[in-house]
Length: 226
Image 1 (cartoon, rainbow, N blue to C red):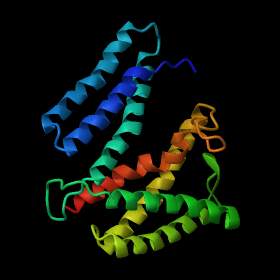
Image 2 (cartoon, one colour):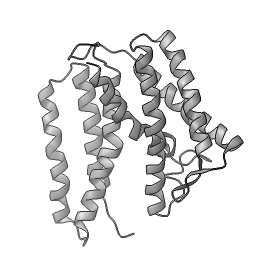
Image 3 (tube, helix red, strand yellow):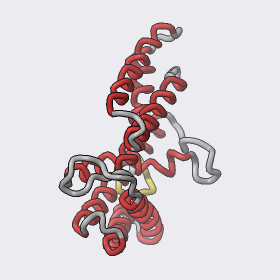
């Protein structure tokens, strides 16, 4: 393809975003340290000056998209593990229940969308991007994810039933769109899978593609509840 994104600096920037935000949430580092993350993004542009390439804008854009697409959703998931009490503006201590609920709903949607689609799928959801996805599969995933939200509300009381149901809706919609976004990226690069780490399943991105798009919307809703 002729593209040469800055893999090393992009990986370092994404890792720094995740680690520094984690240490801030654990109150190891003050909030001021978060400010130092942003110059790293501009460093990506500066380093293009020293590379023998005729596509600096494309290389920079791909690197920045990689940093935001991969690291920022994981940073936001960190914040779900330190949820503010409803009605409060400050984060509380570590509590894994909301993030566990998030992944439980996500995997419920993914699993039952696949199973329902295999059994009953006829009408294509987005054939030009992902020919195997169907409307029937999406509705099946949504149905069982809503049931899972009722289950979670019974055991995890950090959120009300209404909030678990809204989270289920956000995950159903944006998790599915996240899968399509990843498929669109792979199609543009003529790739079947994002990697080969998981034989028969592609790469890690193929297992977590729905998480990357859904987590910012779930995070925004949890913050709205403050």
